[in-house]
Image 1: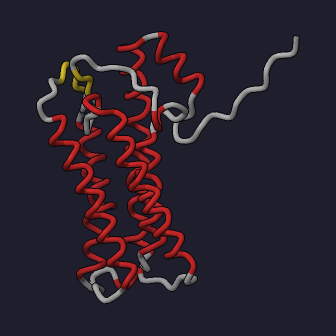
Image 2: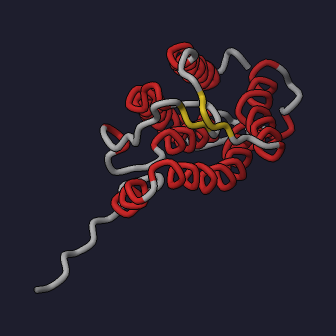
Image 3: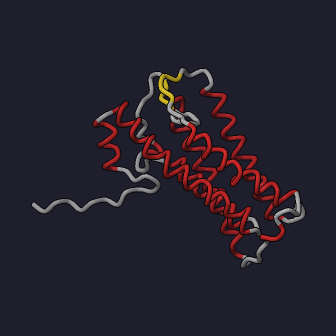
Length: 200
């Protein structure tokens, strides 16, 4: 299916996604980790995410094995997917850049870890997860296959639901009331709606 232009768009976006992650992994490779909390559940969920976001899409693009799940879509959907992918990649890059040496691929606390509340983290606590959700939805809109297309959404959801509460608990343990205050003024995936001022 390499002759399908939207498949090529997906592959190009995925290559940029991997490139961004590789660059920032190299930048933080020297930063010492003082706390690491990853268990068998999270490792298993990461494998499942890899199947949904990498294995199944590549099987669809390079082999006929998933042809039984091919679907026809309105012509506007892939364009929406391309737009979402661009937004996702920008947010993915910006999230890494704003975290700087505090970023890690799993549940870790770095030495001299700081609470980042600037840039894209000023109003959203988990913009990187938001970018992954956007990329997963873009995958579904770009690929004309219900299985390969929407596998990333289906497989990322359990990891997100398991990891975010653990991650926020780690941040509360590290930063205490400062992180609780940060949680009150931010949303998880999109900005929190401002609360009206109390009447005098």
